[in-house]
Length: 278
Ligand SMILES: [Zn+2]
Image (tube, rainbow, N blue to C red; front, side, top):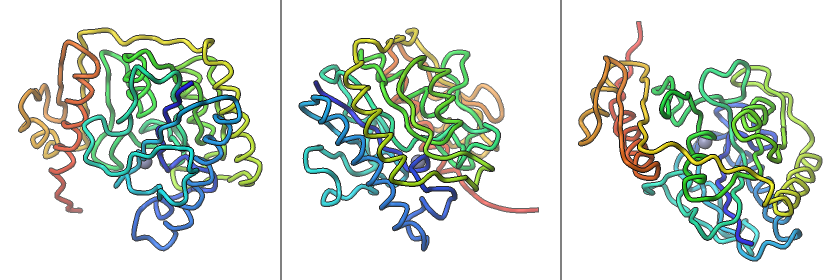
């Protein structure tokens, strides 16, 4: 039984605001400690239930949040941000189940803690075909395209709801209740850690029950940007089409291919940042 873990940070236990997840901020180091606790809880639960191998992909921002020396020694770790498959780098057909730990709801979800899609300010929305997706949705489709179901999602209450709506009866752990984008009612860490551990174990035991909805192919992914400068930058990349002032599109025969193009499109669009106020 091989398990893949994509570890984001905004949805970890005890995390409520941007300062908790941005490197260099005073509160980041405690956010990092909280992230290790949730990820290690998922790792422990998976091995308790019979996992033989487990790979964790650090999936937040710089993708250098999980320290090798603080992560459970039984887990393999991918660290670093220059990855064509970004948050799902490392998942493959050899995996039996994927866990999304520390995830957050898609941009625009009311009261959801740190809600965004890929970028905090620049991206309003992502669509796969006609469906609006958050990070959970577009990453889950990538896993599904390789035949790997998502069995566990942890994050705030809105993330758990998004997971059930997108994926059906998977294991979810709501580690906090969103009050606003930057405030949360945080549950006790020991309690949420125990729940993640138990849910991870159940996800391994239930692996044959999870549905895999393979994405339609060929596929297109569209990005609605917050301003024209981002769309212009994104459209500078070969294969990216600008279909409206603030909207860009990529299309490909297979989902993994269009996903990699969309990752590159998002990176290019973000590089068009030029802040002004008025
Ligand atoms: Zn993140």
